[in-house]
Length: 243
Image (tube, rainbow, N blue to C red; front, top):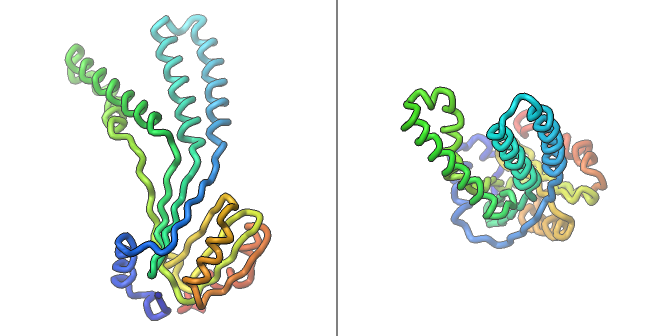
């Protein structure tokens, strides 16, 4: 566990962070955070694009343009729905020296396969354009070509976060928000973190934290805003060396 003496020991901190990936997992919790904004964005985008398609098709677009515009509308609408509204899955892994958090969007694999297929088709189209039109085809469609090549390898890439235990930390749980905030009495980059739960295991996580923060200050509040207005939270916002 880190102490105030370790705050400026960058080498020790980085070594401990990297070691978290190989340490034995003592406790593990999985939470799901539901997202809905993408559904509204998808419906709104589809409505606007449908109106534009109807308006442009009167005298500005031919049959090919209508088909291309329609496909773009459908693709972007599905993209908003699948990726903009994807639930967020977090896996918290407690080890003897810290917590490893893995975060990823919950998106069906067939959605990624669809994007990769579109990328492959785009690559073929770009190559055919170069053959028949010449290198100048990339001048007008350069962005599309680069995007197509990038989409070929489009896949899920979880984000990883490391949290090291700091001997003196304040841990506050918001009951209504199902959220736990950890703030060390040190630089936030050392060991600051937050835990979001769907409510089913927030108490388990909070009690588990008690085991790994024996010198921690534990509090429970109602609203999430109460966390940031808590006197102990404000006290720990400053590095110990600057108190």
